[in-house]
Image 1: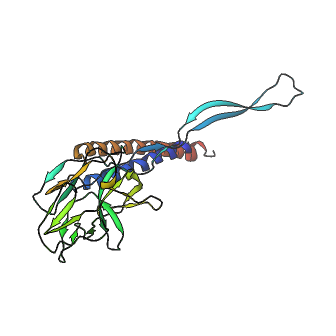
Image 2: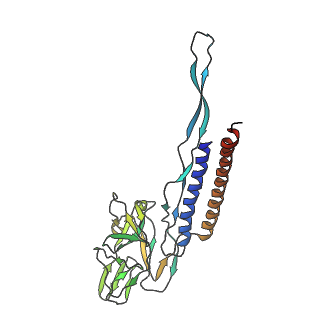
Image 3: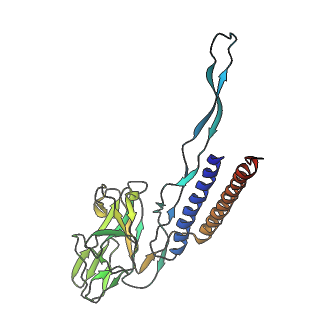
Length: 274
């Protein structure tokens, strides 16, 4: 009975975690360049149940020996192992703002590869983002909407001196007579990146540095100025998934209540001394 109780409880916990991931996706449905998280459910290892019993032998002089009879397998619950980002390309939205940029990916040498803008956070650490909703700060530096510096291909913050600029499809800023290439990074396996908040990703500690997008053979992409990449969250589909998670949580909750009532009867009624 206790095994079933914990199995149902694990289902509740898994659906609660899934609901949190879906709620975060829904919250960021309007965030430019946001990549939705997926929360696949996994089962704990199956157990093979066997019944132990003594087999009676025909000769009474011989001692009975224990035997095992297989009953079958049982699952011990489910869980959400991790939230996996979906880096698929989303649609573009024209804004008419010259500091807005969007990455448009074409063919990639790796099936799941992705291109990112390189930025520098407040601690001077390199981070990566798909949110091209940039602006120019009071000192003339090109920054993200969270104040992180956008980097050039030499790893330095981009200084615009407050001037108007154009961006080529290859990601080069033409500021006056100066051409400044954006630092565009390519990851063959973007699942090595982890979300760090404020629309940026960071590399796991043991992962190799990201490659130069322009130098990656077979990679096709371009930069669209005056555009932003939309979030790839589908609000309608996410609402349906949230309702499914709620119903599954409710079913597991009823199972827990049923086990609780059975345990109450076993302890307080069946086992009562008369």
